[in-house]
Length: 151
Image (tube, rainbow, N blue to C red; front, side, top):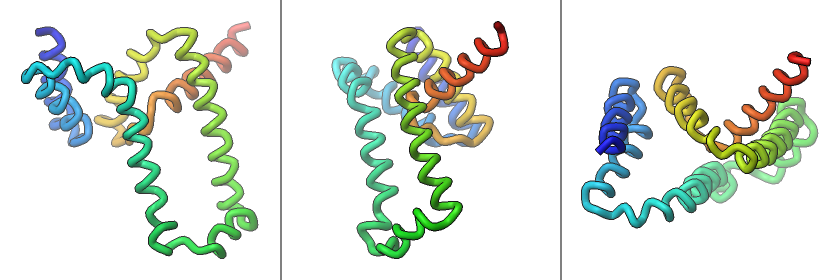
């Protein structure tokens, strides 16, 4: 019953914070629980992120498929300052995701803080959840900065 209450609180938080993603996700999980389909939780937990990233990537790649992005546009990535910054941003993001994965392997309990922080960021900062790996990567970076200055 405790987890049902947490899901209801997440639904209410999502509604109050005008975050339909949180409200919908919590509602979906509560419905699965109420109709006794908890057996699907491990699969959703294991593959949900992959499916979410798949659909996010599909949405981002639609301009390529629709022809809105041309070969010329791709060439400008390497010849303009914003394009180079985007390239560097992509490199840094994947590096940080790797460091986040390493951190989560060492300390899996951090997921709780990442989830709560993501919910607070979604509801109060109007953020968009793109994955726990980036949040873990930023956490790993902050820990390194803290360790550096704490010496």
